[in-house]
Length: 391
Image (cartoon, rainbow, N blue to C red; front, side):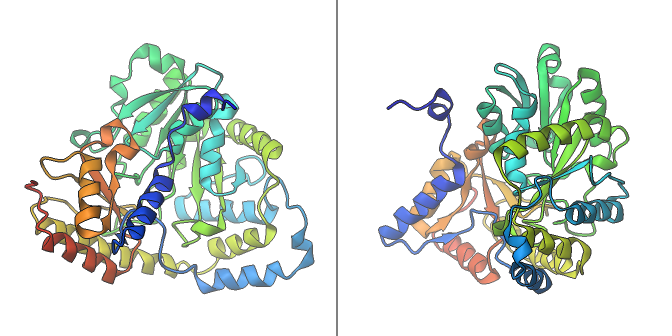
């Protein structure tokens, strides 16, 4: 029995592999303490859960939902965009609901990519950008995100023939895994590049609400001309601690949104309506839980950065996302260092190579673990004699 070529070429999903390594270590008796996966440990705010319970008891919500998403949900998204970013959107033509932004990111290449077409993919980057391209039969041209360039793609370094052939460009700020933020003028540069080469921009904006030290991340759609060239993916997962609820959206250029909606109506049957009503409560209700979460993440950020810096690292405070991106000690590659830490300390980190070739030499840790676990992990690393000086 032979699988399809796309399955044979498909690498194991990074976080599924991490789960396996954790399970294997536990079977060997290792006291595992994970800092690897970005899954908020704080509960979904109570008023959102309460709305889910209320609406789940209504039999009208037990039937097939709207394919495009409830009109009220899309309206709530439009209202949130206008309040938060000053961006006006047509709920009927410029917003489509998603079963989490991941599925929209995976499906958007199916809308525009024919076999052999090129997509521009950040490296290191969220693996789904390249996986969705593979599923559509496309080719990934990797845009290096280098520390020396602030983890921004150098658009001027993309060969003209590649730019002319490219269909989609994926960008993501605040960034996963590097925690970089987009400086003023970057989105304008992206819009200009996309218009020049007729490229659709897909901005993954999952972390815009998780920021620190007074920084407020912009929306790509705020940029003049952005609605002409692209869309933005957003999710309630990290903003409202709703990773398990699987609800998000795409917004922006109406031609792109219509195409993505057409794919979805042929693949899935929409989002359980009670979850959509709970999402409305999230978007229109009190936003103080986000501020509190950011305060907690900022405290954990400082704990990790201070702890690693005391061991020889030289990390600067991040301004967005729920991650710390750090170089591995001398003498290790990223998988080697992750394996060493797991064996010697039981602490699990994510090797940078899992995010692409240019992630080699780095590792990622997440802020989504209780302070006590972070403190214990740092203490174990210190007690094991791990320093940035390496072996």
